[in-house]
Amino acid sequence: MTISVAQAELFFLALTRILATIIHVPVLGGRAIPNQVRIGLGLVLTICLVPWQNIPEATTIVGFLPFTLAIGKEILIGTLVGFAAELVFGAVQLASEAMGLESGFASSKLFNPALDESGSSYSQLFVIVATMYFLAINGHHVVLIALQKSFTAVPLQGTITLTDPTILLKMTSQMIQAGIELALPVLAALLLTDLSLGLLAKATPQIQVYFLGLPLKLGVSLAGMGLVLVMVLPMLSNLYGDLGNKMLMLLEK
Image (cartoon, rainbow, N blue to C red; front, side):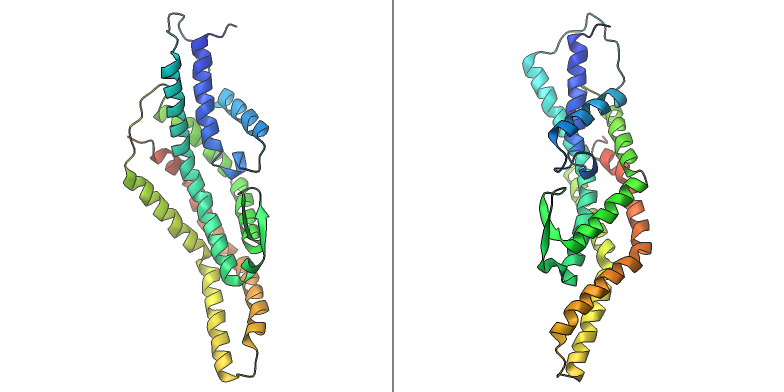
């Protein structure tokens, strides 16, 4: 089987879009994943997701400058598609940081190589649970299906229309709201704990509320996360299930 230059160009453009997308998904191409693994995964996905088409021999080869512009366009499309996935995982990170800060775990932070940033042990635990749940409900399949549909929405060497900026603002605000809603049960429990400690300090000033409240809030936050998982997991399921639509929303004309 002979491979023409035009076929190789289309394959490279598809690879560019896929790599520009998966680097925004921590599970598939996060910062902790070596570049060799990212490129290898991108090659495998390109072979599987993009069907190999026979191109007529009379097809003209794209010149250097148009091909460079086409690469930039594919990087832009991949960034737009991956932006929605990054917002979803950003909402999970926002919820974890909010709970870790209020619970007192933020006083000691650990470096998270997957997100290339530091965070409390509580936030790390919540992110790990959310990531494992993402894999358990086949959320990575949703990402791959949306990635494949992006080639139908905007074909290779096709035209792309500029997205309405209000869509980006709306998606960002929705993800911030989702992050607050994920953390709200634990934050409410910690707020009630603070109110109880305040009343206790007023009733019995002899009690050292600070030294009593620190371990108490740690225990309430851990127990609260275990108890509210029944509420949080369905919310995560809805968030992950709608991920594919949000990834394609920015490409809709």
